[in-house]
Image (tube, rainbow, N blue to C red):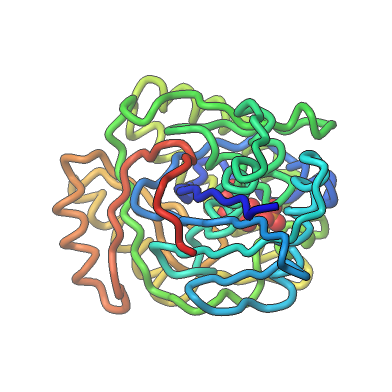
Length: 329
Ligand code: DP6
């Protein structure tokens, strides 16, 4: 038997209504429906090789062996795919990111989306997009939103079969830019997987859930109408609501650094002076600054002037996770 190999390229995504908290942790069923955009310049490339000579799975990220915990999560995900394809072959997985890992850019989203698509292709499993999103979700919740192209909604549901992601608008629907201001490249202290488990004790959890549910229709409507102000106001509120829950979880999770707050304040000052931009923040200190493309060059320049901003990555709405011909191994 020969080796079977495929490579996939996947975009990370930024959520406008966040996935924060789950109703079922094992099945990764989220408390609420979320909406996101794929990021064309924050990508993961993953090659999966099912090899009959291997005695265990191997995982290399950025040419380095990973922690046993990360390797186990990948093996568990490959087990789901092996079961569907009815094979026992072990795999070598080689993955590279175009951005720093574990720093509030959703590396697990692009990682598990690319892993799912590459592994399924290597094993000749031809699944419809909806099934791919469900499978990716079992590896990492936000990964389901990186499978379709452009602007994507992930449905909260009581069963795994109904909690899938689908496109709500293609990438060319809106020339929205996400400037990621990088202020931290180290791994975050509490990863998002853990953060989801700490939501319940927050006294704000129920209020945030109700507000996120109301915010969902506001965001969907503003996105479809390309109403940047209505959209941005709600996106920034939702990010603050998510972090209010994290900060009041038990134990409390504080992802922000002084640089995070500096950017939040600067963007508010610039906005008051007439530059339309809004912020959102995932589970880390880096800030995603959203604007329409005409304002991106000015905003990028201004972000670079702020103390502590190490880099700014400009992203536009990105494509679906796709197979490519270049292999990493
Ligand atoms: C803050 O998808 O990383 O980025 O399902 O445990 O892998 P797991 O969690 P993950 O959580 C992402 C949380 C977030 C918000 C979001 O992307 O919606």
